[in-house]
Image (cartoon, rainbow, N blue to C red; front, side, top):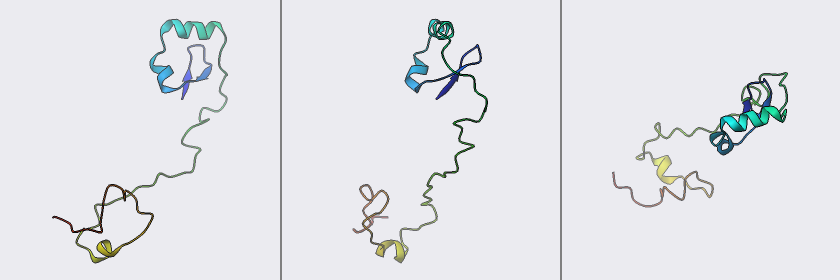
Length: 90
């Protein structure tokens, strides 16, 4: 993640490093002149990335549908959790 120091420079931190960051650490980073000035405020932002997350909407499927009961595939999502091959108790 990117963290902006009070002097305007930006540094890269992990979440753990951010959570352990103290005021003395921030003063030390400023004294070391760490970080870079960002020209583009949207750099490394999700705005520039054109990928979409996969979304599975299971609310529209009824477990009584014949297509669901007869569906077989080696690459089913969550196939280690849900077993559609056996009888359903609903």
